[in-house]
Length: 399
Image (cartoon, rainbow, N blue to C red; front, side, top):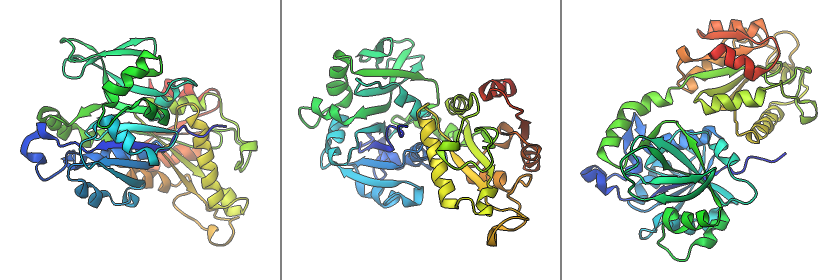
């Protein structure tokens, strides 16, 4: 099994933000408050939930302000290192300056743009030969952005300052192999003009289109739009899913790869939910911990293994909530009556608070009556999965 292609992202956050006028005189553009929180926090939150938790911040203008706000990233659930530009290096130069920190693959994002995509799906676009993938967005007017020319998945070029009209644009989210550094001759340079066009000429650059929320705060009009919609964007619907018997075949206390088998259609169901903007949260009773069959640490490691498996399908689970207790057969402190063990609603209620979830757009799927009862107790819809193909079931209940 391959692990996910990378857990690293480089965020380009060094620009001056001159198009925004005086509001960036003392505040770097990525630190502007948008939709109730600093804009860059929105990007990091979205990366983290996809399992991308190694963040490189390329900073320049008012770099100390960004470093003071984010520190080492621990307060935001990620690790952050900084690449400081002494003078503007361009988007390609920023990547070049980060060479000593780069893994084999890294996501690259503009620090003034949020594009809500399934990052792991973009990783599926790169094959054995391609060196970079670009996330594309269909817009009604390409004139401000430039129009991307495609031949199948291969990007063949970009028409800068294209005429008015619809088309696919570069949305500022990339996945790059560190070998693209070989295509850079000098700093400063542009990743888009000096590197990607060379890759396109050699058939090494692919694009994949998405229709998620796209916000570019680089001009006053789009910044104002972001203020109106970003707070509600992060308040997502969630699909809570039981694990044993719903995601995987229930073989009693499954906690090893050898005993794990997906329910038919389960990886596809998780990916479909990721692609459509839902949070995917596992809610599972784990009495095997109470019995002493495996430890909480072993359970968490196994949950990470499941997410690695899902990454091969371009999918991920956002969070796992588990109950390690049993009221009768637990060992030590694990023998207790609790409100987290289903049909109790404790796990769901904790997730609703932790993730600021919209209950009206959420539901619980499980194979036992206790799953549905837990959902109802938490004030959300519950659906009983009685076997078969999970993606087919999902389409049926969400249609």
